[in-house]
Length: 246
Image 1 (cartoon, one colour):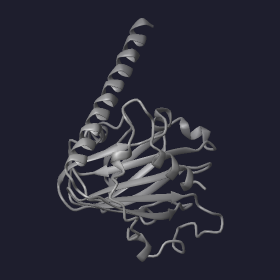
Image 2 (image 1 turned 30 degrees about the vertical axis):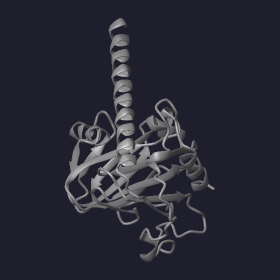
Image 3 (image 1 turned 120 degrees about the vertical axis):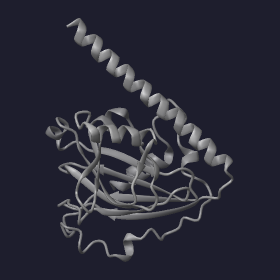
Image 4 (image 1 turned 45 degrees about the vertical axis):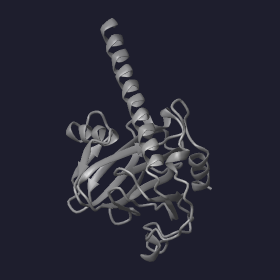
C-alpha cells in the first residue's frame, strides 16, 4: 500500500512539474511575441458540430505556418457528444506546440486529444498515457519539441476512458497550435449541433466558409491576454467558450 501511494505521489509531482515548466515556457513565448514588435491580425469564424464524426466531417481550422499563423479552437463536448473532429494543414517541418487552455485542470483530465495523419489515418499523437510512442509524441508537442511533417492532419477530441460513462456532462476546452512567433491569429469557435442541422454537416458549412476570412482587425494578440501562472483562464477564453455553447 505504501509503495502504491509513493508511486502515485511521485507521478502527481512529475505531472505538476511538467505543467509548471509548460507555464514558464508559455510566459517566455508570450514575452518573445510582445518584444518582437509584430502587429497581430486576428481572424474568427464559427462552425457547427455534427452528429456523425469522421475525417470527412472534421471542421477546417486553418493552415499552420511557421512564424506566421497560430490556430485556436474553442469548443465543448456537450451532453451526449462523444467526440469532436477538426482538420488543419502544416506547411513547414518545424517544432510545433500543442497547448490545452482549459478552464480547469479537471476538465482537461476528462478529455483525450489525438492527432492523426489525414491521408493514411495513422495515429501520430495521443494524450492517453498508455498510448506508447504516440503519447511520447504528444508530450513532445506539449513541450514544443516535436517537428511535425508538412501535410494535412485531423485532431480528435473525445472523452477519456471512464469519463464516457458520464455522457451527459459537458466539458469545455480550448486548443492552440503554434510554430514560433505569429502575425495572424485564427480563432475557430464551434457551436453545438442543432437537431435541424444535417447530421453530416453537408448542408451547414460550404467550402467558402471553411476559410478564415473574417478579420477582427485588431493588433492585440490573444497570447498577451493569457493568464499569469496560477490563474486558470482569460476573459476571452471564458467568453468564447460560453458563447460557443449558446
